Image (tube, rainbow, N blue to C red; front, side):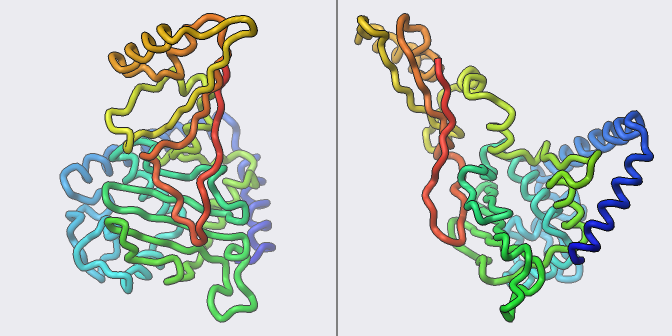
Amino acid sequence: MDIAEIEKRNAELNKFLESISDEELSERNKKEAVKTEADFIALRDALAIGECSLCGYPITQFSEKKPCLHWLLKTKGFKKRHFPLLFEKYCFHRMEAYLRWVANADVPLKNINDLVEEKTSSKKIELTIRYKNLEWSFSCSESDYRGHKDKHEGKIPHYHFQMKIDDRVVINYGGFHIPFNDEDFFGFSISEGKISKLAYKHIHGAGMQELLDNFSPDELLDQMIRAENYDDAQLHTSTLVEAAPGTTISGTDIANLYKEHKETGVPMARLIRKLPNVKATSVISPGPGVPDLAKRTPSRRKGDKQAHS
């Protein structure tokens, strides 16, 4: 679908939506929310017993005649050569949403790295999703999205996909130029705000970006508790404490706060607020439990969120 066709379709849809009252749209949204909730619970419960809520078969079931997204859950028999059977049936948005749901059925939010500040600026899509010992990553540069007109492969708008099992790449980014379809372009139109009365938002598929978008640094600090295992921590905090001019910070007070931290699990970044006459600046960044973005070109993690008290 070319740009002119997309714009024409968007205009027609906007005109149609304008003819629908806000009350009717709200009612439709409520029904869709109920269905989405039920679908997520069905997926989560099915996974717990080793079944697929999409096709109804065990997640170990593999048949080339019945492509299903549960193949990406390390189904025995699924090979790289079978992957086209999936992306020919399922568009990018459906595949991404499924894997987001799978990740959040295990541990909410932290298994999905869609952090804007970690994303390469030239990328339209860049995220990594983890589930147990599996990792899936999507990548699409602006030039991928436009299509490489001067190259043999990738002439049409496309994205790239990578899959790892136990940190071993089984489908590499360069293996396929996966074309977007009409459903994808519709999804992009919504996410880019081109459809006036529709919004694209992950709910059960929310990742780390939604966490940071919806909670202020102080709200995050207020909700934090110490991770039992630091390697599983969703967030990392470091705090700089400055005494007010003409005052000092008691080592005994710090020792008492650290003891309370060990006993209660309340982060030092929050306990430090108890000290009088101090200025505390806490830096919040993704913890070691959040997967690194699997980039097509190496890049260092960046971006912190700060809380001041």
